[in-house]
Image 1 (cartoon, rainbow, N blue to C red):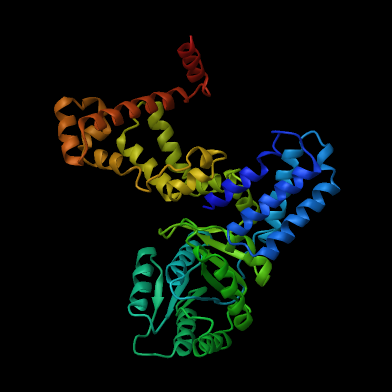
Image 2 (cartoon, rainbow, N blue to C red; image 1 turned 90 degrees about the horizontal axis):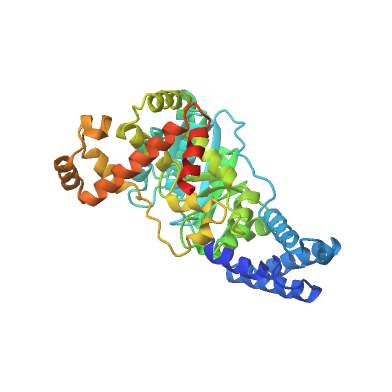
Length: 443
């Protein structure tokens, strides 16, 4: 996410992080490189220029050159200005209606239908809502079927009417269905449309007027860069939407849309899509995104994702098993599933400060655990419960059944034993035994 922009900003600010003398001249030169990095990321020239002028003004106003750590203060000023440029504070959804109606709009191929499902899943799991998806894309082949597939996957009801070609009537019927069946949120998925298509823009304006949504969201593909900003402005002139959804931020995006869209349309980015899975949706926090762009990670979001998967009852059961030395591969498999639910591995690693730079150029497979899962699934119940019974012949069978080698099976068993010992050490003594063991290893 924003790897290229992060690298260029890091290089631009490098001289001001304690490497070399700090003068008004090289502050100006550094900010010139910052402006160039923003323009390369497809940020509008005027926005990039205004951005660096504000940073320079604040830097000179705060006497950055005479502080003990001028480089760090400059990074903070850039981070604060980036945060403000992207909206300042996180913006929530207006769910005041009964039911609350959310209208999804955007270009063709921007990911509206998929994101409608993600948003429904988000509201269902995190806001304990009962959402209804309404299929109003009557033009794209299989669009209605796609929404039904998405709804089935997340166990959310979908309202559609294949015999009706009027999206306004379908939207109104969907809301009536929601009221009759206890749904308190309605997400209306509409057809993709070009801003230059007058008839299609009139149609979505008519849908908006008929259903009076509490939230109108504009879904945009972040990979389209500055074009996304221009399109957002055109749609906003017609719909006066409430917020922006940026999809495909896990792709090869330069970042210009995320950074400059707020300043152009004066509407907040409310959510971002970070992958294909239905769980790959995040509330957009400008401050956290600024941290990630500047290579500082996003520990808060990482902890929040971990907490979402944390089950206190399961944790207590696991603790008892570890204490009794009964931790087996079935328990290990559960832990893997929890990690996978947190998101794709590359995105998670990017939240750890410094990890993005260390892993630059490294391709982190989203299925990094697939070999481990295959090996565990090839074990018998007895082997998963009591790994000590796995001998040479069993290893050969497990390797053959999982499509891996005996060496890979041995490696997993070794890592599992080491992890089990470490977890055992952490029980009871608050880590004292583990610290003693580590100190002996250093002698």
